Amino acid sequence: MKRISVLMATAFVDMMGFAIVMPLLPLYARRFDAPYWVIGVVIAVFAVMQLISAPLWGRFSDRFGRRPAILLGLCVSAVAFTMFAFADSILGLLATRLVQGIGAGTTGVLQAYVADSSAPKDRAKAIGWLTAGTSAGVMIGPVIGSFAVAFGTEYPGLIAAGLCLANIMFAWRLLPESLPEARERPRRQPIRQAIWLVITEPKRDVSRLVWIYAVGMLGFMSMTSVMALYLESAFGITGTTIGPFFAWVGFISLLMRAIVLGRAVDRFGETNVMRTGAVSLGLGLLLIPIPTFIWGFVAVITLVPIGTALLFPCNTAMVSHRAPEHEVGQTLGVQQSFGGMARVIAPLWATAALEINLALPFFFSALVVAFVTMLAFSVKQEVALSEAA
Image (cartoon, rainbow, N blue to C red; front, top):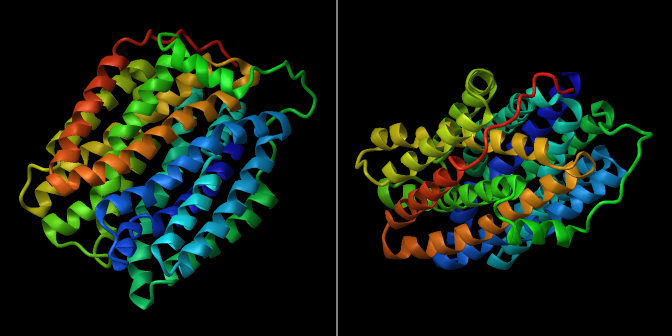
């Protein structure tokens, strides 16, 4: 539990830095008169680099350890936030996202660390705790960013970089290695073969779960990519007033992951909780464009973090159960790589769709998640994990 607590603190500070700058990115791009589709490209570059780097980080961590990979990823993120602070053109923002995407490729490593440090029966709960830390960062980061931007456009990036440097020192001192020092290391399949297996054998347990994650992420990230622009167009929200909306979503996500998720899994099982999350996420996306007043929007958006808190941690835990033990890091990296593909596609199409109609990205995202729900109901129930260690 101590290891998970330290990892939660590390993930919290890292995500807080990310959340400081993320809601401001589309608004910063608008300062350079970038059209929506260009903003979509800037957002998508992050996902391209995460897609490429995630399985490499996972394989690196399987071989050399989780701790070195996490520390290196934090160093890359610190560089990216500093670049964001001083970006003075749309190309500067593009470069920032490229570097940040490389650093963010360690998400699968964090999840593999949890898998190393928890019993299989507790894994969804532990991943929920980890993502509760990231949700807390999502809740606090945008508020800090909205406050800091009032003093100058460079301040959010500088604050995020400073937090990242402090996080590196914290993790260096307190985060232990999770992999045993002496253990057999069976030969792993090449990364390209692991990726190809997901594509060519989509009905395999692990492959199906990876596709649920990826397609669900496509629906969710389509919403996230255009949320700031939608709030600006529909309700007149600006960079200095957008923070509370992201803070609310982060608060609900934190509450769900830290308190509700573990109890729900213990009572209903990972598969059923994952299915419930897919239904909630799809319903929330469908309803977002309906309200014409801001409090109605706040009410329906609440369904989205409820859905993601139930869907994604359970899905990741199930992937870690069903992956070969010596390839957990690589398999979770492959999962993040497919999620990265979704993160590439989502902002490109969603920002273009926003040019046509403000409601279109959300209705299409709801349709995508309806397909995810169908996939989730086709997943085999998990085996009993109470005896696993």
